[in-house]
Length: 237
Image (cartoon, rainbow, N blue to C red; front, top):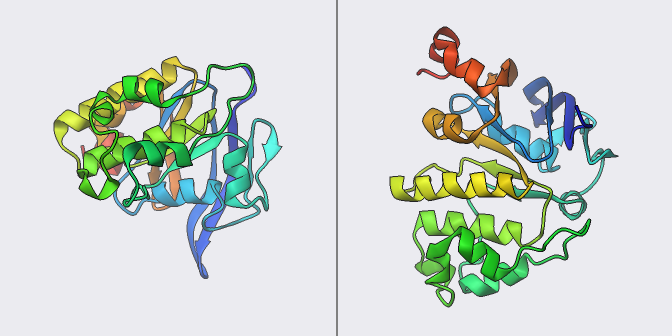
């Protein structure tokens, strides 16, 4: 197996003095989709934030493309090619779709074809129909698509996606699934935090079940799908 694109080991994280992650260890390979699944409050979002340097982590024990993320500020982690789409999207609501996309533009590296507005409009056709619409005039699902599209404009090697299906219409959820498959086909790795078990199962190669800040299972998604007892105990499904 090739060297992992993202590697995390013995990761602990804290909010103040309260420890919320306990020795998490996992890897993300180039071009794969891995889902962090678990109940609300299990530690999925905190895991993504700890990787990106947004919460206090024990030595930030992670590497991306072989480079240590320890003590790096968030903007430098992003410049390495690790994109992040938070649960609350964080688009610029007073800017148009096209203007939002331009704020995320960065050159591609490694000879890859760069993501352009036209390419992301192919991925998200709905956005193509609202190029001049401001963010505050868009639905939650449309804002979610825009947040992902803007991150792609930075030409990342991997994207951390936090709860992309939460609170959006089923038809948009399906579009989101198709977009993630398309990103995988382009070689973009995705680390996905999800409560929606069915959504995660349909698009992920591997799964990592988190419960109370600890990893309870890690392996192929098909193996988790076959383990009804574990799913009932940790995911309630």
